[in-house]
Image 1 (spheres, helix red, strand yellow):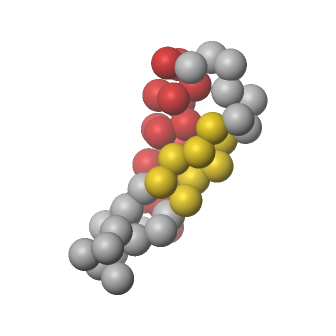
Image 2: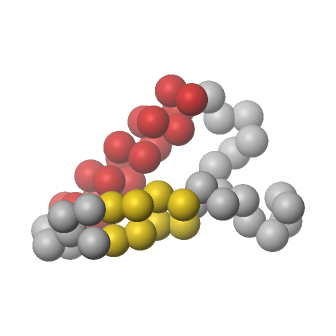
Image 3: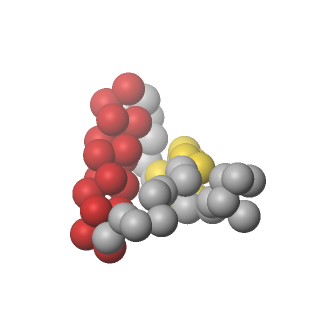
Length: 49
């Protein structure tokens, strides 16, 4: 299991977010093949809050 905390740009589209999540998923699974599940937390950074 893995988790990634990502601060997406406010102007990102839904399609852009989906593409970005797929890319993050692919890169992490390639580097860490043991990942079975991956959770993405789209919590904004402190500067955006």
